[in-house]
Amino acid sequence: MPTVTVKIPPALHRQLEAEAAKRRTTKSAILREAFSRGQGQVEATAGSFYERAKHLIGAASGPSDLSTNPKHMAGYGKSRNH
Image (cartoon, rainbow, N blue to C red; front, side):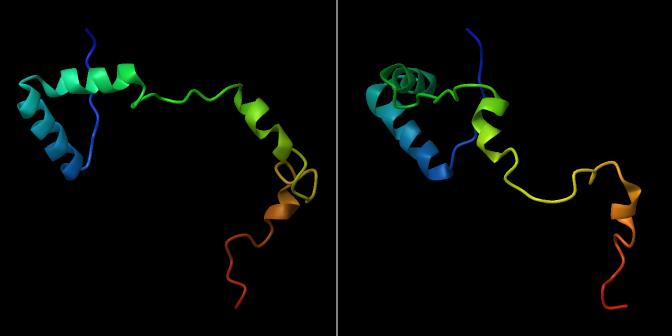
């Protein structure tokens, strides 16, 4: 069986340990049961990054050659107060 390591807050860890002790089972068994019931279900994100972000394409305005024209970098990093 594969192993997965997760970090949880101390309070949740105490609850997990208490539940495992009460049931006389392992913390892993408690977590497997919770996941199988869907309490720990990981929501899959549908679609590619493009599908999720396509509504943002063209949302910003600016020069079309911003990434390729060096004139846009003139004075970059210099303080405006000097």
